[in-house]
View 1 (spheres, helix red, strand yellow):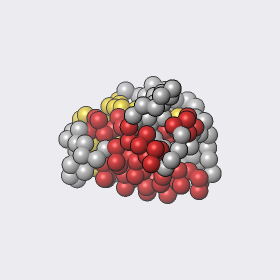
View 2 (tube, rainbow, N blue to C red):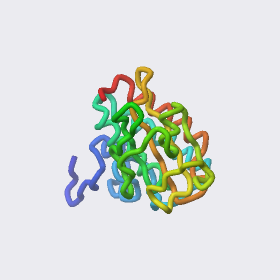
View 3 (cartoon, one colour):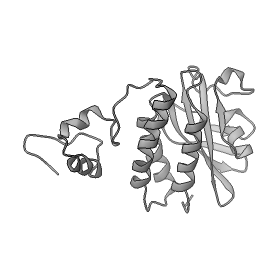
View 4 (cartoon, rainbow, N blue to C red):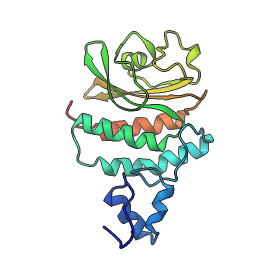
Amino acid sequence: MHHRGRREPLGVGRGALLAVAARGLDFHYLGAMSEGILLPAVARGTLLARPERVARLEQALPQIRAALEGERDAVAIQATVACLLWETLAQTSWCGFYRRVGERTLAVGPYQGTMGCLRIDFDRGVCGAAARTREAQLVPDVSRFPGHIACDDRTRSELVLPVVVDGEVRAVLDLDSTHLDAFDPAEAELLGGLLMDVFAGATF
């Protein structure tokens, strides 16, 4: 869709453009939005108040589910979720997946942010705990978490959720922040529901 004298913003899909057109908005409106998702732009590293963060995530989730409708390839799903959550959760300094590649081993997968740890054993760190227990790990202060792995020394809080498909842990979603207490139980619950939906029937 092209309008004379205007260019479609990079990273914004045709569905997003159609949504803007349907709302009667000028395409320049997208300039104030996050790339690839219809949300107000927020500077990287900003820690919004809890109600604002939850509302922003609730606004993004239907768009993420729509973007992944019908997709079954696990890597494609992971890459897309990492990209769109990176734009949604401005407080994150790292957002992505560690894939299960052995009986008790995770390897870095699609992500956004600084370089991640290449491999993590189930017995180590927050990611390992999530994979081992199959439970979300909400850590307001990583310095108080025994055995925390500092892939990035700036990380101060972390949220990790397991991806469980057909009763098996297939991956974990790892979210880091340079802020203390940057994640909330409500965010964890919403993200857990997203992972269940988008990975249902996925091929690993």
